[in-house]
Length: 109
Image 1 (spheres, one colour):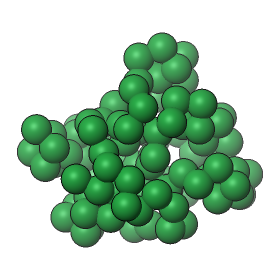
Image 2 (tube, rainbow, N blue to C red; image 1 turned 180 degrees about the vertical axis):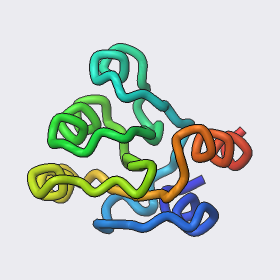
Image 3 (cartoon, one colour; image 1 turned 30 degrees about the vertical axis):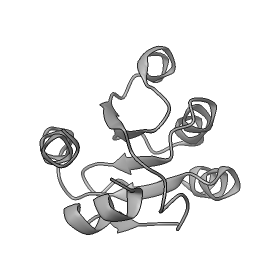
Image 4 (cartoon, rainbow, N blue to C red; image 1 turned 135 degrees about the vertical axis):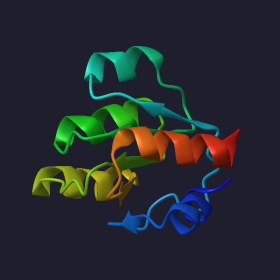
């Protein structure tokens, strides 16, 4: 399933159009940056409530094509600019992380 298909199926807001055709292999949900650095895998979507530049830095390092900000998270200007520079798709969901995880699991399993 591609990032674009996930956006469409979950009704996510896309803040920048990067990696839309990238294949998604799974998802990783965590707000602890060191946890994501140690455990997330390339090709996964990251689900978080963190809205600062360090998120996109780690996403770039781990080759994560997209980040979903839950609970209508608003990225700070540095995060959005860095996401655009690093071609990381920033997505926003109104749902809490629990709901986003469940919906993604059903789509990707």
